Image 1 (cartoon, rainbow, N blue to C red):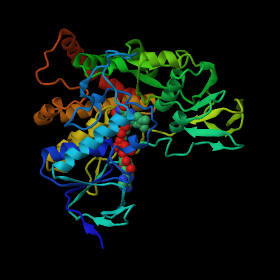
Image 2: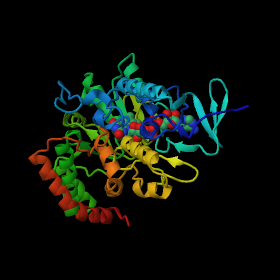
Image 3: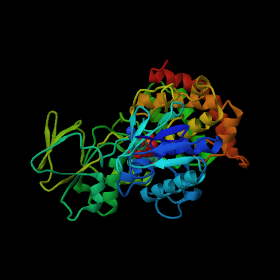
Image 4: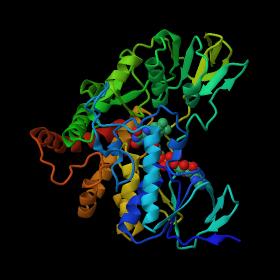
Length: 458
Ligand SMILES: Cc1cc2nc3c(=O)[nH]c(=O)nc-3n(C[C@H](O)[C@H](O)[C@H](O)COP(=O)(O)OP(=O)(O)OC[C@H]3O[C@@H](n4cnc5c(N)ncnc54)[C@H](O)[C@@H]3O)c2cc1C
């Protein structure tokens, strides 16, 4: 017999999206939430992340709306001195555990760990086998629509034969014996983290082979900071670059010129634009790696050999091949957030998923009509290519204009740190901020028209 959960919402997924949504919802509505996750705790993919991961951007932009992560501290030493701190894996997980305590203590949230939502309003515990149901009026919240794949949980997308040594990035920190060569496979943030971590531990750049099927555009971390003049300045520069560009290539080159976009090899035009942030010191380290293999995707790894569709590349017999090739961000079809069957959490502004989920939670708490809610919160999606990036910025800017047209949402979002574009109440202002706001206002119209054209969006 199933136990019936006393809940108005069943939130499936206790990662960043489910936590941000639930926090905003219960802080603004008198409702009960059952939060379930098949993992053993809250924090989502961070529970299984590689041990040397950090947020790629400021802690202030991540987490739940009620509580600032990391206390808004600047880094006081190291190569990022002066930039905002970035939480480590353990800090992120500890933060989410505290946020869960806060929610449970409110009396509005019940958490069911190790529990699978199996559809049909039913949850099953992987540990006790107990079954739970929710009533017909309980809304189902899909808080895993954009859940990333990570190397610890997804096998490499190539065959491993002949006793080749292939490890997920997580295992890099637990090697017993140093090999004569490391082969890092992947083009994204995880691969750059692995390369930098190896270099920081004294591995010779020539002992690293980087299989990079695509070159990435990344954002300069120094301009993605929770300082209104810096963030608004970056947005204004982006809009100026967009309105002046006649092609996607020109747009990204203008952004590079403006100090917003970075690429590792200036002789190569990147095709990938997931655009995580990167610091300039990291870029300099990555540029010391000369053994870069650009032969498309690996098909298989043999002992001493990397096989691609048309050719092979020799590597050391004892090489450790580091799997950083899970697809990370997801690109499912954009769907209306509010549908009769569920609420599907998605990014609602360009690039900041926690804030997107929090806006949805706030709007759900404060409005009745699903049609109206969907009008306010059109989904934005994540980018993969340059065209996707342009489309995300187009949609994200339109979404911001939509929900910020409501005075209460504007007021609420100016008070939550995870809103990257906020100007907090009482902010003293500055000539730099005034200038950025004027340039943004002057360029946003032409820029949106140009982004639509470049991205092939209607
Ligand atoms: C290495 C890495 C670093 C990142 N760094 C940043 C960053 O600095 N800043 C940033 O903004 N973004 C970052 N991202 C992206 C960002 O973390 C993700 O987009 C965001 O966390 C997605 O969160 P989520 O809650 O959708 O997914 P998840 O964290 O994966 O949570 C979804 C949860 O749903 C659960 N689940 C799924 N199906 C079911 C089911 N049927 N029943 C029960 N439970 C279920 C899963 O167990 C999972 O815990 C990073 C991503 C990665 C991989």
